[in-house]
Amino acid sequence: MDNKKIPYKIYLEESEMPTSWYNVRADMKNKPAPLLNPGTLEPMTAEELGHVFCDELVEQELNDKDAYIPIPQEIQDFYKMYRPSPLVRAYCLEKKLGTPAKIYYKFEGNNTSGSHKLNSAIAQAYYAKKQGLKGVTTETGAGQWGTALSMACSYFDLDCKVFMVKVSYEQKPFRREVMRTYGASVTPSPSETTEIGKKILQEHPGTTGSLGCAISEAVEAATTNEGYRYVLGSVLNQVLLHQSIIGLETQAALKKYDIKPDIIIGCAGGGSNLGGLISPFMGEKLRGEADYKFIAVEPASCPSFTRGKFAYDFCDTGKVCPLAKMYTLGSGFIPSANHAGGLRYHGMSSTLSQLYHDGLMEARSVEQTSVFEAAEQFARVEGILPAPESSHAIRVAIDEALKCKETGEEKTIVFGLTGTGYFDMVAYEKFNNGEMTDYIPTDEDLKPGFDSLPKVDK
Image 1 (cartoon, rainbow, N blue to C red):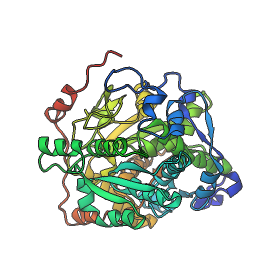
Image 2 (image 1 turned 30 degrees about the vertical axis):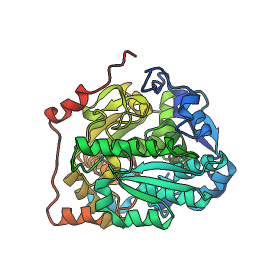
Image 3 (image 1 turned 90 degrees about the vertical axis):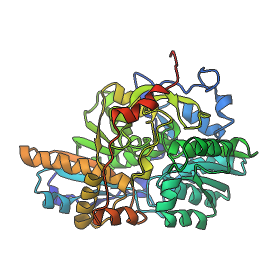
Image 4 (image 1 turned 180 degrees about the vertical axis):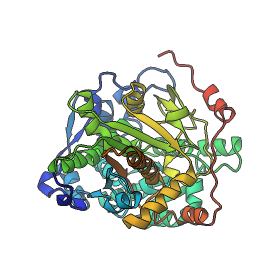
């Protein structure tokens, strides 16, 4: 099709929106390894998981056979308030780069939470309400997940307790206030409000926290308060399932204009955005219907994919959560206080880890200053101030487009723009003032985390 006929923004009609989530595990030859009970090191049963998670979410977590899971009508109706989200042709960026590449981004920042996180938050809140619970607990890094969950809980009249990574709590006070506006209680993590938080503070005085710390506190809060369950914004299979709405819409929008992507890029922290974007396309690859180059982009300061080990590890710093087989830096690894709070998790989704281990996708790590250079370059020509997390994908999308400029190849690049950066102005200020630095952990820095990996013979 003539490129001139492709609009800047491709929207689906409401009637074209997906009515089922896609479960990529159903098409995987090598399934993700099961979660293990931290006490017995045996595979977690549905009953055991039900003490932590909502019942129907447990079913979704364990389901690796059904390719499509129907989206309940109430969730479909909620989605229609801000979905379908646009697939945007980055014509101005292409022109600025002077590249023959065609660049598209799926923009997920067009809701109050400012990110893709609402796609799973509303689903998890729905199932909690359906089960008759009083409320839920969770962790949040950059604050986007906590914001999304507070919105979803407000919609269903559920209590919401959020443990926010301390560095982000301090850097992003306005994100915190949005959560409180929607009725959530927000606690900086690690805190003195849980036994695990107290222990972490004793072992790491003055720590800026990590997602692993915050997860431990949120799980303790859920399991010690009757009528509460824990919900998670990334990593888990159920979250990747809900986020597949991103990839399904992207896939449908591209097919509407007969566009075949060559490269699909997403930032990677725990895996929700990356998994949601690539899952339907990965399904095509797994079934032998098409081939794509998938690139996961992570911070050089927290390089789970590129420098981690593929092993069973605890999902949290306090070692109370199930063990997952994943690419990990060790549950005790606490990254430097970088400005991409949502990408500060020590591990990676088991599903994505298995796909990466099987050679079906590649990963790159990028330094913080390089990421913000790309963010500002994008903002100045495309008119959206991107979140630091999303800017990792922008960095590599620009790099790939410049490679096309060198070779003359007309490749089609798609990346996920998962959120806006309007609550990240402290980070932009440091970059603009020349105060931002890059930190790359040495092998010696990573060794303690690897040495502490649990000995699991599975």
